[in-house]
Length: 594
Ligand code: GTP
Ligand code: SPV
Ligand code: MN
Image (cartoon, rainbow, N blue to C red):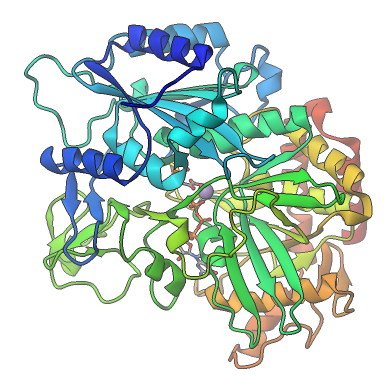
């Protein structure tokens, strides 16, 4: 390629990596449409990409059935001392892990091209952005990185001779012997999958998987695990949060971030079509949020990504029309079903086709007894295509945050919404968030676990220290700190049906939050925090049985008392790294519950 790389450390690392993985050739990626089209053509010719007649410039991929989600059990935060990684991360000593992975990396790109992808997380030149370089042997990863990050020449230019970059090594771990026929989705078996982070060196090594967060290393690996570690060192925040702007009928703007675990509603909330009259919602980001304190002392947020890697199942014109419009063209679909007329389909999109081909490539009918799309099927879509993308979504300065929402997916106990009394109480709500597991991780689904700040799988250091970092940020922000709330859209009735309609109706809850920030009373004290009193939620135009509303907002003392031992155990695992200010919050809760 024509691009001149003058960065000695970068060229040294690329050469050293090539010496280890021994590819057929090395290709530097410079971004742009021609490169994307060339890569996609390769994937078409190889039979890995299926063109979609119904969606211009869009393609379907089917992964290997073993490679369908993040693998938390195979994800490591490898700090020199185990305690720095903490009890919520898997740990192997850096030397030992590198030795094991070098053995796998040795010659692992035989018969393949090695792509070098310079990318920026955040607008190039933003004071909050960071540059990474991913080495990969997967052309599918290259195409996805084109959409999800800012790839190419401008990044190399911004790096100059000695700019800081985060090195990310990725291999699918499937070397080709001479003459060997390639698989449509090559990858390695589970015991050879490693998603490894060396935060002290800002280094990422991933092996064996081609899927999502395991392989698109700018996303969870860089923007959360490595970035959270950097953010603690440098005094900023890297969070698993959507970012949106809500504009009230009087023109007042509120910027809201929300931390919900994987497949718990971030993309949907970020693109919400408000049910409340006169309010407008614009999307800034749907998964990751980087925040720094700005010159005005307020927290400024950017979305480091440039695309959405969104959950397909459940996305429909009714639930998320803005996402449906976003995925009309120029998209990559992974593990969706294919219809006879050349479109993708997934459960919850609308009426099922009479027949089609399922995510495993087999003939399928709605009577098949299994889903046509994998529950973690995803779309990769350019953020700029979202009809409600905020005009300021790429502002290098970021947007000023007013509200933090924490939460999770919980059939019982947690009410629809409650507000923290103050910063420490808000950090306590975030730190004790609990959620039922989803198909976004390769493990059991529907198991309730503590997922503090939706960061359990993504915090690149000891979670106890992370809680302290939140407290420190609050101390620095003082009276300019965002207000904190806890939401749960997933409360179920005894019969197992959703009590709250969700999606666009969630705007009613956001409106209440904004009114609280604007100084309206409208809340009643409970042992767990402030909840909307009778008539405080705007429910105009919504038919919700009064009993359901009562149940949604009820704080069941006995159920909350029963939570205490689990919160105690949760905190105990961090030993003396749990801030005293949080155990004081737990004492307060115990006292208030009586
Ligand atoms: P990741 O990309 O994995 O981080 O997920 P996410 O947090 O962005 O979740 P997403 O918005 O994609 O939603 C995941 C699933 O939850 C989809 O099937 C949605 O249809 C469903 N969902 C989202 N919001 C709501 C809601 O308000 N109510 C209900 N009942 N379901 C919802
Ligand atoms: C998540 O699991 O939270 C995701 C999907 O956003 S992945 O990119 O695979 O991490
Ligand atoms: Mn996510």
